[in-house]
Amino acid sequence: MALTAQDITRVAQLARLELRPDENSRVLGQLNGFFALVEQMNAIDTEGVEPLAHPAALLGEVALRLRDDIASEPNQRDISQLSAPAVERGLFLVPKVIE
Image 1 (cartoon, rainbow, N blue to C red):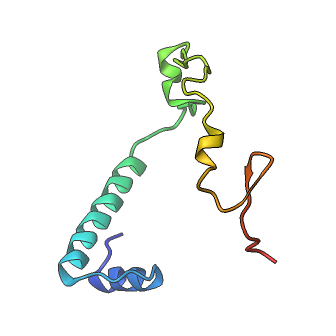
Image 2 (image 1 turned 180 degrees about the horizontal axis):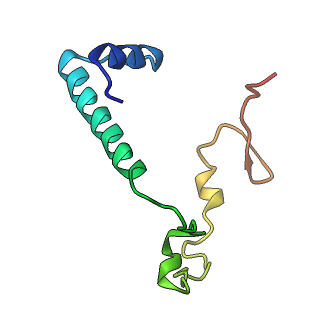
């Protein structure tokens, strides 16, 4: 499925993008390259191959390297709120924007 320059112009119009002529041809090449890659992947025989629950499932047990949730900064709420126009009980007050 190869796209044409008219297809790119139409997609850009629908996405409300303004593309210069040089951008139009570059995007055309990129999208056609993407579709060519998808066609190559679709051509691969995957009969009998079970989907993986996680990309790293082939590696065995995946160890998450998470750090401990420890506060590293002191509480500076009062200092941060000094320049606020309105504060109540430690919260910033803002005008209502949705009726």
